[in-house]
Image (cartoon, rainbow, N blue to C red; front, side, top):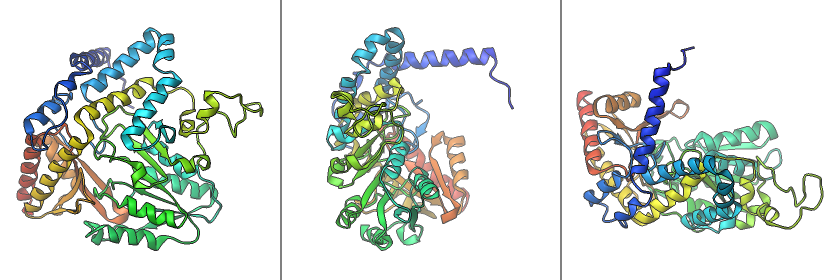
Length: 449
């Protein structure tokens, strides 16, 4: 075991933290307002001004929002202020900021952002929490089946396997590893693969809105309509679309949707949301819970009328589990302010513009294989690719060591999947994209791909 940090190192960390706080507060929380709504997706001067809202050093190309979206200055400042306020005057903070009414306001704003009713949504710690609730919250019998795909994230797949191990439900895996799905010619093949897995025992279909492996935007509406016609519930892993795409969960037609706020939405870590369609609310049980149970108190008596009882009958019940991180919670409305100022429409247009350029340019580099579709229904801000047979980790290391460009590799030997993945979001400007494409061309040439 390595020794802990020295006193000098510890003090250096404290100094760095203080500098970060100062840098975040140097830009007022409303500073983004000076930019106004987003302009044309190719207006690089405007989007460079947006990039300046982040603390990312100018010599770093941050192209990995799919793992973590760095927060802009206004969101960081909101978190610092929440910490200060909570420790400075806790009573006032509890009454005015961490109150039930304040939480209701955050849920209402989040609901408007993702296209649902306030009583259908809860603020969670991450996508995994929502996927776990959605998987375990529905009543099932041993032998009932849950469908998922082998390009789902473990956050969606492993709660299913856990339920199978404990309660005898049966996981049914749809194989999307075949090369015909990378890229798919259209959504029909994916829908057909899901439909072929359905049996009389299917109770839930769980799948990603955007596959984190290959960047494929799944045909959510079609899959959910198929399931609804057969009386099957749907649970969508929405780790990536919120903050990347304009989102309306009602239009998607899903029963449940678990989303992240710390990726493309740019809120802090430990933030996400969980949507449950109104008609399904009384069928989805919370996992970590301390509120009224079937309308009764901890003593088995009818719970007195009031806000607590009312919240236990809405999606707010998924938040009723004790103390939380108020600073993280405070980052959510600040992130919504940031997105709504730029407008989700302009952000999506910018993301799609950069991703389209990257896909087209990568395809022109000899030996580079792009796995995501060109069909606009099936592609967005994640682009997966390989540089010949070069190990994706080696590609990542070269990008960072030589060019200070940060992307991700996704590898699953079980399904013979190993690829690089680049995320294109609003903290990247045209120069970052130029450097990335030039670096990939350089690596391909060196390896004579």
